[in-house]
Each structure stands twice: as C-alpha cells, then as structure tokens.
Length: 317
Image (cartoon, rainbow, N blue to C red; front, side):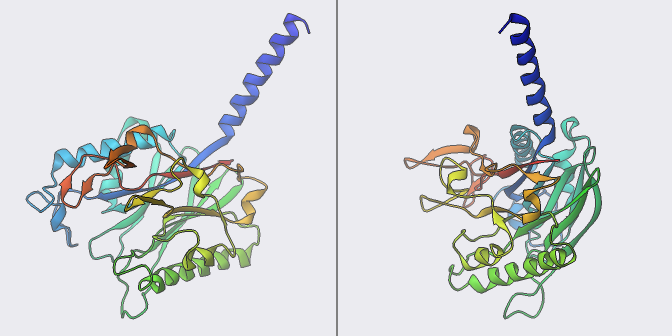
C-alpha cells in the first residue's frame, strides 16, 4: 500500500470515528443524595437547614452543586440526565446555571413526599425538543392519599424521531425489604400501565426508564418491568458489580431499562453501553472497603458526592 493510500485510509478512519461520536449521545441517571437548598420551605426539611442537625449551609450547598457538575462533565454532558433526591426546581436550576450547561432545560414537578424529595430531568434543548411532560401520582397500599414520589415522564423529539423517558424513585426499604415490597410493586405496576398504554398505541414506541428503584434486578418489582422492558444495567456494567453499597455489599438499585423499539431505527440503543460509573473521585476507602464517597454518614458531613453511583446508556440519534 502506498503512503498516499495509507494516509487516505487513516483520514477516513478518523472521520468515521468522529461521525460515530457525533451521533452517539449519553442518557444518564443520578441519585444525588439529598440536594436541599438552605431555605425553610413547607416540606419537612429541618435537618437540611442552617442550624439543623446536619448544619447544612450555603458553603456545603455550593460545594455539592459543584460536585454534581463535575460528575456531569465527567459523563461528557449527557443529552438527558434524570435526577432523584432533589428538593425543588431551584436546586436543579442552580446545577445548570453555568456556561457549560447554557442550552439545558428542566422537567420538574413537585411531589407529595413529606420531605419534599422530588425528581427532575435536564435535557440539551439544542439537540432535543420537549413535546410533552407530566407526572404520575399514585397511592400506596394501605394509605388514603399519595405520599410517595411521583413518576416523572417526558416526550422528546430529535429531528423526526420521538422517544419517551420516565424517571423513578420508588419507596425505600425502610421497615424491611420484604415488608415494603408491596409498595415498590405498586410503583412498578403504575409505571407499567403508562408504558403499556404507549406500547398499545405503537408497539415500536421508544421508551427509556431511569431510576433508583430501591430494588435489585431479581426482586419482584423489577421483574414486573422485565416483561416489557430490557435491563441495561447489570453486575457487569461496573467494576464493583453495583451502584450502591450497603453493609459492605454492592448491589444494583439504580436502573435503566428500554423498550424493544430502541433496538432498531432512530434513536436506537448502542448494545452493551449500559454503564455504572465509578470515577476515582466518586470512590473512597472505608474500613478497608471501596465505597461511594457520600455527602453524609448519618449527620456527619463527609463532603463527598453521593451514596449512589451514576448510571448511563448510549444511543444513536
């Protein structure tokens, strides 16, 4: 092969790689661990106020905002990021009030959670058009009114392609995993009805489910979703085999699942792209174990990032 032809092939490879990189975009989810402002609101946020038991203040709040931006930049600014454990719209607006995120929009609705824990999405409005959004509110078994986080959803368009994203933060395991299982099953059934309604209208609907489901892949709630959606986050998605560490055991609580419609056409999933991100700055050693570098341990301020690791997938637009 001549020098000219070798050079030509090299240029073609570089250009093809650049083209692929341009068409490949990331969608992420991140439980940011108690992102509260410092203002006393109507919700039960006393522990995250100046003078509260956590001694939360403006300096700590700003440090946490900087940490979240650092994660988003390390993720190469996902086209969509779903957040859980954010207090309100204003804290999300603070995240993107930086020149690196000037094109980003927000999807957010207030939830009935007593502590004011909400869900949100940010999206690159230069690449996506938000067509619709909403919340799905539901009542847990044994209760008379809605008390848990809503399910957040949005409908996006990229050129001629349309896809849906839902963000979830299901009821916790406080009180025991078995005793609270029925609550997460109810959440799974609720988002499942929404997904089924989309698939009934169009079996090729492109749907991405993000969230901290507070259950592992083998649990009842997640198994309900597996009837219609394919899991993208598995033990092989990260170096520790999980996104969360409890009692020195790693497990997958943070999930991304997709509909079959994303296996072809545009947008479409890039196979094996599901990833649990464990950037070195997100990890610390604790009692001889590597664990997420969290913001608090109890009411002791550690100055870390979150007790969860971010997860993501790559799709082609």
